[in-house]
Amino acid sequence: MSAAIIDGPGALMRAEIAEQPSRWIDLLDDQRPAIDAAADLIRETQPELIVFVARGSSDHAAMYGQYLVHNLLHIPAMLATPATVTAFDTSLRYPSAVALAVSQSGQSPDLLATAESIAETGVPIVAITNDSRSALAALGRVHIPLAAGPELSVAATKTYTAELLAIALVVFRVAGLDWDDIGTRVRATVEEAIAVLEQPVDELVDAFEGRERILIVGRGYGMATAKEGALKLMETNAIAASGWSAADATHGPLGQIVPGTGIIALTRGDAGRDSVISFAEAATRLGGLVAELGGRTIADAQVRVPSDTVATELSPLVDILPLQRLALELALRRGLDPDNPVGLAKVTKTH
Picture 1 (tube, helix red, strand yellow):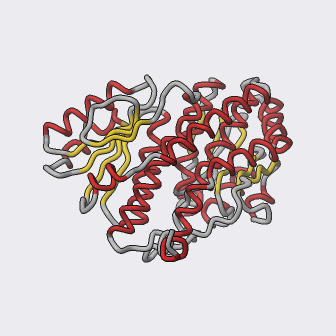
Picture 2: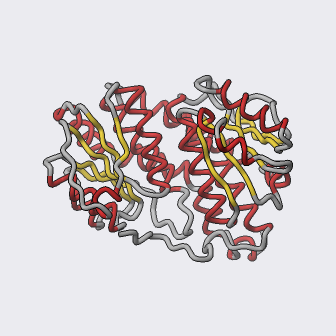
């Protein structure tokens, strides 16, 4: 491998994508006391509501958490709206609740203001961050370190999947899964992730090279992957990418498709797959080029993602990997540096 590949544009992002399975094992093995403390807090509170506080990629992890809480705990879950606090100066009254505040840096001003407003109402906060010294970590009744190590590329990769896993581990423990069962599930996910990372993505990159408009469509747990994958493409390639639930995409987004539009269909798992396939078929009729991430062959290009070795609840950890790599490789073909996208910073100072 040449020094240009090791040290050149995209080297940080490439390394951080590759190390994700190892970081998941670190989180599983090293953060059990914090995970159990968070799970105990939720069980003791017996909340009527779980509130997720997040921004950017972390907001997509929170969307995943919302589905997970609904499906495994049968408790309503909502995503906080920071502008309610920072733009409108509105305080909310919550029922019995627990807040999960998720942020790789723990420094974004509007996220901190929202978490502080929630804490002032007496709602306990579980802080999930990659910086144990951050203001958000200090604000939490419990803090769960992401154990991802320093993330130097601007685009979040390993911190995003660490957030997914941290949320899953908490929910699993609240739902009553023991650590042996959880460990088996996570290690199966790690094995599949390693296999997926070893697959070439040249077919995907060739299919989408030069395209300025890409839609990613999923359903259920796949909606978070669709939105996060689109964000990676926007951040690193400066193109018009968007992620959608297939249930919504058949409305306005279908009207965006013109001949040559790129579409990525996330077909992993049974839940909602038929609606994703229906959208992909409609997009094909309109002249779109469809790629599939899943176990079927419905598209012009494909990355096969096994669907029978990983628990459905953990599939988003694996499904985002080809999209991260697609964003990286497309940016390099465009002559861009995905480690340092123009106009973006690691921490977004939104007030």
